Image 1: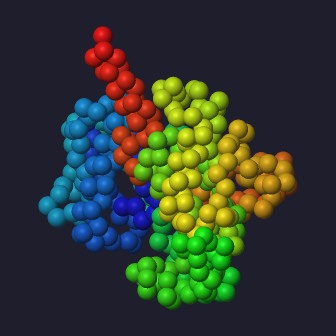
Image 2: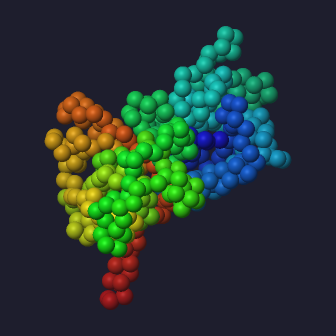
Image 3: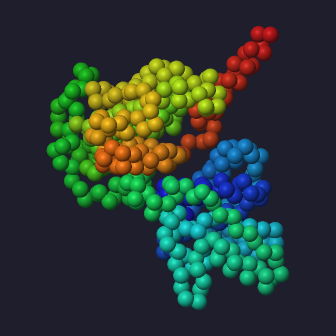
Length: 385
């Protein structure tokens, strides 16, 4: 059972690997260590897993894949894990060393060092499968094969993320760690707003909490110069989510936001590239959304074209003042490369990587939207003939 974005990314990586190797799947959901999820949470996450499986099946080109059963640990009336291990038609176990081990504990999705207890063997997927096979041999059942997820995504390894300055915007603990930090008078509503939003009143965290239904704004979750980048092709809901998170990460009084939009020349390799709107149109859509979301930030938002690998945060001079980058877990490795470039090449401090897990359905992607536009044009052309 996942408690963080890291855990969920780990689970999704395993599901994706499993779908590539079978047409019949049993998904075992284990609790982490001494954590005991409520029945409501168990039920809720079952739905999330089935949704993730549909997304994985669509992304892998196997939309007919559907023979799957999810078994949450301790779900009333559901078969226990031991029953699955003794299934005659079971032939493999798909997982990862950091999650599945004979003696490993509390390492689900966190890449922690496997635990080794004298007389109990060594943790990890292979050891886990060997133990299962020893039991199955006594029952005259065929042995199982271990299928490890490789490569293991950076977003699924908390140990690697710690060295990469990553914070997860979607996780409760991200704010809880800073809950005791009081907002100071550095937080104000921008006094350079346009007429329709003009105010110079001091930003009052307690008042804001009342207006926002109790939302807290820990000081260490806001930054002075934030960057976010993308193609912003079609401005689908994933783009809107990313821009919203970027806006929410900027200091309300003095912070600045730079939105980078990839130039046309860097998008020619994408599927249905001919359906991608021109740079000017994509920049205008991104600007319109940000201005509509946060009209008081108009004087502190820049929308710029990106023609280089790392954009403004990776350039000499201008890049030095950036302190945060908002990105999805699918581009987390690029963010880590940017930080290495800043440290090793430019001699700058690394950015705080403010990461969000991709949650939109597979059908809601720029590629899918371009495919729909292409198909519509093909149908229109046939009608004219």
